[in-house]
Length: 162
Image 1 (cartoon, rainbow, N blue to C red):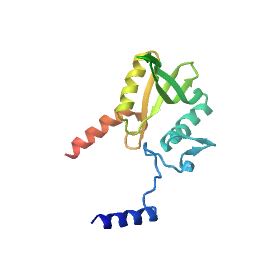
Image 2: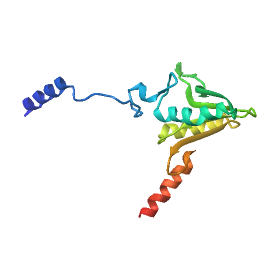
Image 3: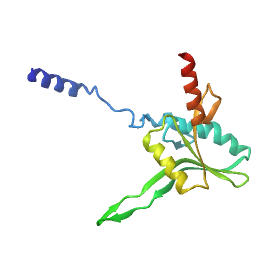
Image 4: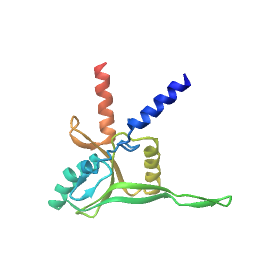
């Protein structure tokens, strides 16, 4: 029996059946699917947000700035018992500056994991004066909508289904 398994294992390795085409965040390895105007985005949804939400607002002057991948330190590095503990950082998808001078941090979310939930809490605590929002795209719920609104609407639709 062990012999059959090793033959099968060699066969599978030789056929290269198992190939990784997506990252652990379910992002396509094909950068062309998430590239717009020469910019490679972390996800197709981020590209769509930039293309369909940011660009039109920049063209009409509603927003004056759109920075991508801005790093925030949620907890600085420190030393404990002679060991250096690395900082906790958060990289914002977008930092939008409006014509009135207000700024907000926008993170594009499909389905946030526990790390994202924790970093959001830390961000709110460390930067209480910065408007921080999670947006997601939902055609059913009206396009680019706050993640919490979509989550609640999905819950209600599921309850109605029974």
